[in-house]
Length: 64
Image 1 (cartoon, rainbow, N blue to C red):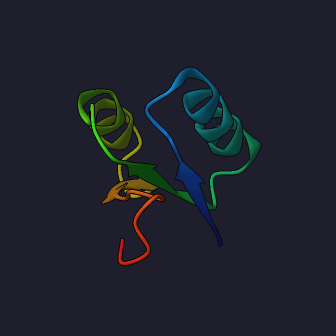
Image 2 (cartoon, one colour; image 1 turned 45 degrees about the horizontal axis):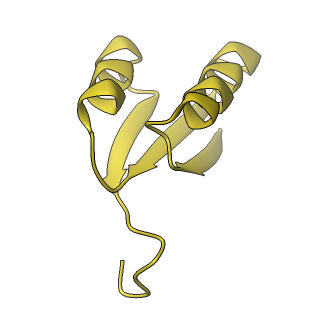
């Protein structure tokens, strides 16, 4: 199993990268890091059960 973290996952590029990893291998698990606008990411997580999760993440804040 490979675990991937994508920051900015609710944007066009982040979503495209996530879809690429889902297509690449059934064994990939993708963490989708978002700061806001979580609805799109929640849809992706629910459409890939057991293969994705959302992480509330603000890369501008060190404690996040």
